[in-house]
Length: 424
Image (cartoon, rainbow, N blue to C red; front, side, top):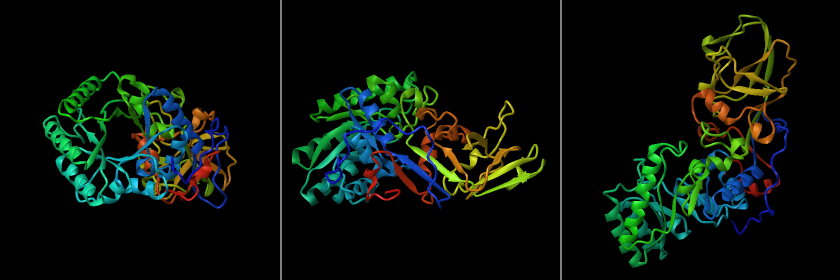
């Protein structure tokens, strides 16, 4: 981990059983429990046996803050970090984090010299990317550290079967020159959340064959890694030397059809909190929000939550009725009870139905989503609950949380966020 950051001996047992409340004077905030991040990292490292854990902190640490999350993951046992873009890797370096970090989405024209000079590892899947890495190595006088990406069947990134052999030959020449060092070889699953999918074995077979080709052409493939969070937890045969875990690191299940976060032993790290901005009584038949898509079925109390799709609350989680007649949109926790969204989610706010006999008041705390049953708070909605209400995935719910929502770091490891800033 960073030489400038001394971590405590280890993560605490976990978050408290009481939901956090927003800080006074703030309409809303996201409380990130760094102890939970470290504990999730420790759990993942334990499941991997002898394989290393790469903590993926791209997209600002899935909305949790890249620098604090990286430090907490390293404190919990991760040995490497992963991001999408070079700029994200350089931000970790600027924060004093010295652990190996891989950036895998390289856009043509990116200046790779700062990355090579600071030891950032780069993913190469094409001749043009290799040439850029070699040029950066020659300019800096330092060998570029590379992970070779092969397309094992996802048809997204990686060298295709036809591109792989010539790329290996070019890599071998660059290694011989001393311009590059191969650190690893990797690929990515399309269906790891369904371990029984036919694509899983097909991709593993393709990856194994690609590694054999590399060795046959004189290229040491280095660390082998194919597993993401779902594969790390559900596919032992996919773990190889290293697993790249992102979502699970933040305590969310990567395979909700298979197991909940609590069943996997993961604790969600983020709790999105707010305070009711306004409370009012309305009569039966009152229309609520844009389009009047919801009308009060009886006299009731409405609460206004000062968050909206401009902050990342999904508009698709606006109120609707499920097949069983029950509310099927998003829900929040107010006064120890779940309350459904009433009407459409707006840019800056949404309304919840507090019920006919409720005595809630403006300023009362709201938990939009949190750790739920995984932290002994079964009534608390989770990011997974909101994902299901919006017809999306929990990755999107936490990652899209906007900059108007400040992050506050909690737990025994909260000091690891010092100097990082919200959203660093």
